[in-house]
Length: 113
Image (tube, rainbow, N blue to C red):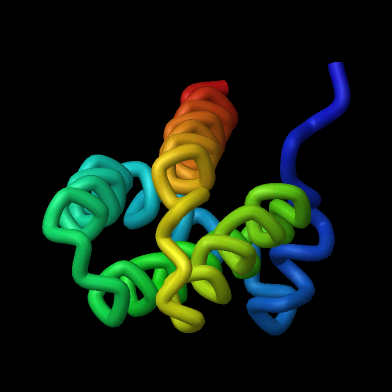
């Protein structure tokens, strides 16, 4: 199975520090439900500025782990919210939510090995 993120690139992004990667991965796994809830709450309020900020945060986290497709979806959500165009936001937010869950599971599974 092809990994959803690039571990080697992610560690390189963190200065080659595998221990920092492990700590960042543990933090992401621990905080993933918070990220998911924040996106859902921002979407529910219809507050485009808040949704943009939450999407930006998630985009940065997904980028940290070199999860390119997830980062691209979070960027699309961020850009739509920045433009005030929330028509596609529910579908985009659902995809980003799934990406967060997928990455959290992959990181948790890897750390359990």
